[in-house]
Picture 1 (cartoon, helix red, strand yellow):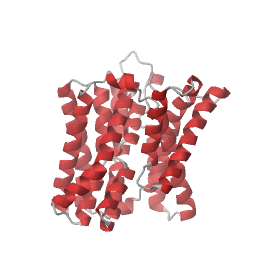
Picture 2 (cartoon, helix red, strand yellow):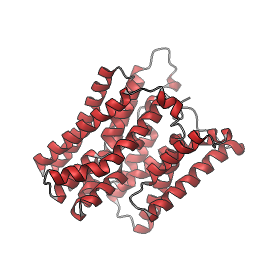
Picture 3 (spheres, one colour):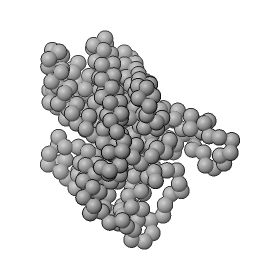
Amino acid sequence: MDTMSADPLPQPSGGSTFTGITLSLLVAFSSIAINLLIPILSPLLLAIVAGAVLVNLGVLPTSAQPGLDFSAKHLLRAGIVLLGLQLSLQDIAGLGAGMIVVVVVIVTVGLLATLWIGSLLGLSWTQRLLIACGFSICGAAAVAAADAVVEAEEEEVASSIALVVVFGTAMIAVIPILANLLGLDDHTAGLWAGGSIHEVAQVVAAAGAIGGGALGVAVIVKLARVLMLAPIMAALSIWQRNRSTSTTSPGARPPLIPLFVLGFLAMVVITSTFALPSEVTTPVRYLQTGLLSAAMFALGCGVRRDALRSVGVKPLVLAVASTIVVTAVSLAGVLLVA
């Protein structure tokens, strides 16, 4: 059963829902604490790994499942809404028109190429869409956001998130090494890291390895890619509505634009319009990280090795191809405008 299906908001009642939510939040808190001690370790990735390990060890109580479903759906959407407060339109505009165009091209070409290659491999529409969004936009959060719209199979979500974790983590080492071999200066290498690596935390780790001059621009380019989440999810929602058959009741169709996308955009407008004090932005940033980490733990609990074995090697091949496409397009674009 899909943990991100469009069913009505579940009301936490009884011990079972409470158990799963509490467990998700405890793991999120622990992941953030570890990140504060070891900044290179992303709390989102730690939470995903924790979920996968616990579920495959068989130590999770079955009573936790309703709460995990709640966390994977509703805590995720709340975290994505708050993610908008990290995005300032002024910072993104500061990249210049050329780099903004490059970001749009990276996401667009990455999505279309991944969907096309996935179709050649014979993968389902939802599987290749999840991988395309994760590798082209913003990693596990984009995978989960796309699932919230198209309602993929649980195994497809789990395998897509696992691939994002593995390849994104590998890119932390690969991009600095390649940048050094290519003789790129810190600024150019930072632009490349932001344009090619999946998760914000992974971008920070890679840019930190490149040098101090890379970090600022890398994060801004990455957040510009995150901003693309809104129009892509809105377009997916419209497409999903249009493909609904005439026998589908109107109430069962997804909203024209998902509410969490509207909330995300509202947060972007707020942070771009008002100079929010650090007393507000710092706690909100930790809350956003906590909500997304809790959701990633719940999604990680769907990464069952028995289910992943049945997926086969095709998603892995698509992940390799998507990584090459996004990395190459990003490098080409950065070299043109840097």
